[in-house]
Amino acid sequence: MADVIRILEGHEAPDHRQQKGSADHGGRVDGLTYGAVHVVVVPLPTKERPVDLRNLDDVTRAAMLSEVDHDIAAGPGPTGVLYVSPRLSPQGVSGYPDLLRDAVQTGNDATLAAALASNGRLLAHETAKHPKGGPDVVKAVPVTAPQTMAEGEFNRYYARGVCVRALAETGPQATVTIYRARESTNPRPESVALVGTTPSAAALLEDLRTHIGMDTALHLPPGPNSGLSIHL
Image 1: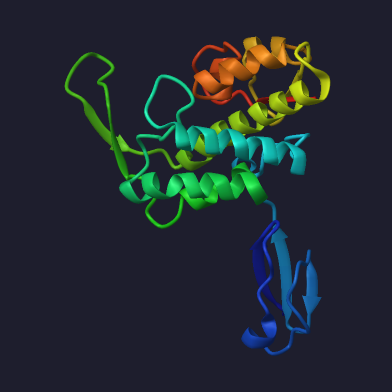
Image 2 (image 1 turned 180 degrees about the vertical axis):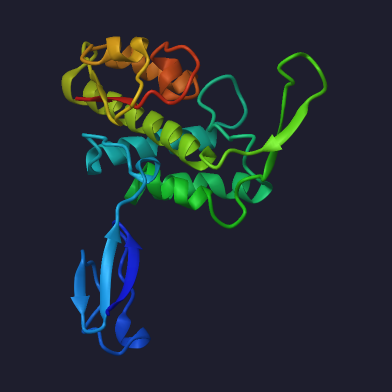
């Protein structure tokens, strides 16, 4: 019976010439058998899949990078500041600007999440307010923290890039279209109502530069990431 090796979707299969001797080559494969080795691609869990950002091309990435660099250079202040999550460790805080720039230039929210989840960049525990007004509670940082942070901030800079691009290509009256970039099993009615609407690119850009997170700029109530984004 062939040995079975499972790899995550989108990852490279190992070079089995070094490990098994019977495989012809490595590379991306999907359920292929090489000699005594059968390689099966395991689909990524939904949370690890990148959000479907329709206008994430070189033009939008350049506008995103300009927005990121502006925030990094702005320093402390009421607006235009790079958001640094309190869940980041000292290593995470110091490395985050470069990780975000790398993701904006060549990656996506999933690559940013993977980077945040590695090398001790997230704290293991956090302090939260007691729901009944008692002493603060120390609890474990959720395992979904890197995905939540990466999706929210990458999507926000993507949307800023799209707004900048829309204004440059169309002028001050430019609008953008809200769509669902990530499926939700139980979408909030407020987010469902926004799909297909066309807000002003200038007004949305100002909101996105001022507030943390895409949902805040869309005036959605607090809750899980809605999965909404915008396109030209």
